[in-house]
Length: 117
Image (cartoon, rainbow, N blue to C red; front, side, top):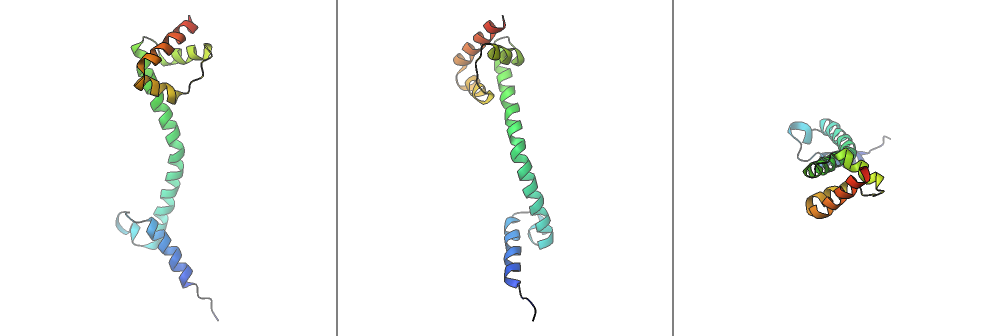
């Protein structure tokens, strides 16, 4: 007697095809191509979740640098000054301050300039 496993096979294929919904061409119709594309998509999403962290940090640094240039100081000097003044503020918060509270950011720039001098 042979083993009949059509229920599990159909369920597995259905699960893959459901994930491939919206893909172009045969990638959402044919099981083999859908499976390849779903696996590739999962790999990219895993990698990009980690890449996003670096991309956001780059964005924050650009914003901080742009705000620092308004007060005639470079980003590297500003961060160096904050470190010498023993002020621990992460780049995300510095970026938020630069956008939403320019006065507080200006105060931090003054503290950094004093610490460098």
